[in-house]
Amino acid sequence: MSRKLVAYFSASGVTAKVAETLAEAIGADIYEIEPAVPYSKADLDWTNQKSRSSVEMSDPTSRPAIAGKRDNLDDYDTVFVGFPIWWYVAPTIINTFLESYDLTGKTIIPFATSGGSGMGETNEHLASSCKGAKLIEGKVFNHSTSHKELVAWVDGLRI
Image (cartoon, rainbow, N blue to C red; front, side, top):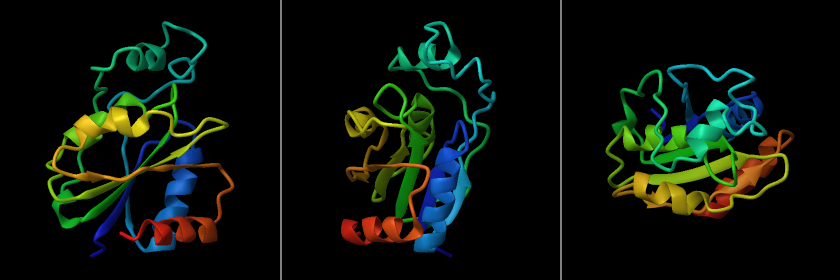
């Protein structure tokens, strides 16, 4: 069994593609973080202040329900957590995922996809959800990130 897990939430498929490439590149297992109630196109309309994603992101205590849990997270030392950047941070469903487990002794490495923004204050917003874990600074990738680029990134982390 791999000691590395790539867990990801993808709203449009872009993060899923990067997560799949990353898992393959580093020989990690993969797990999709799925919302209990899937997001519709209207839910993801960031230009509408009343859309589901806008409401969730405007409330730092929001914890959207996830559809299930990875039953063997204890088997992993390192968890790469992927997501699209929303409002310059991770979607709050990522906090839900992280807070669902005892992360003591684990290394958490965020990675994100974005059409143009960086990681923003992602780590600051995720830190309280990673109690007992080592949270490493993450990186943003685009939809065309290659296998080679992801391997080079992970090799540079020295984990």
